[in-house]
Image (cartoon, rainbow, N blue to C red; front, side, top):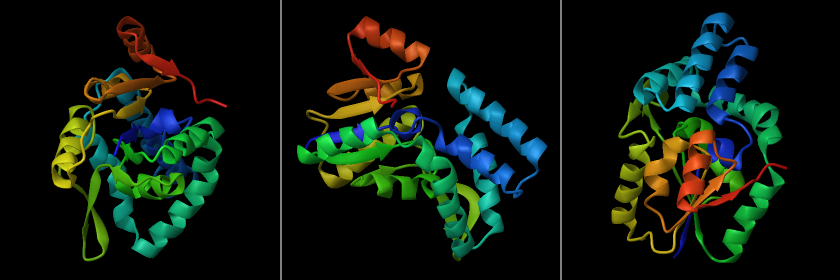
Length: 218
């Protein structure tokens, strides 16, 4: 079965779900506004520049989850989806997903944003599978730690290869859609790399390598 793999933030969504989760926490008064926003902005700029320390960022982004039980977090996420995620949904992205479904492709999101934030978003898109950093849960509560290898940069390739070995799927004929130069390792691996509203670095590479470059912005 042909794999249609998608990055999430800046690709299927017109913004960044992880950054907006941080903004949402500030707006809800859950975290200290000045300190959290300053740190969140810095991490986002590090991501854009390609210099993000993913382990440091995950420790920062997962810490607020430890304050709540699962029911409280589910309520918060529902509010977050309505307030932040739905406005970032793109009709062109939904139509692209529909096209791959109609072709019988296996749909997957691979993202560096943690599974708590991205799980419900992946379900909304109707994905068959999600690969994301996995927050640790003990006795029904988040610990603030992550388990396994975060799916960021080369980590996306590592996590995908482990999944391929486990499931028997292959990358023959595979697609990968991304906006970010951080995803270059996976773009170089698939059969059909497709740049979506690419950042400057990735757009230049796409032109040099004659990769398809599309826009999903409405």
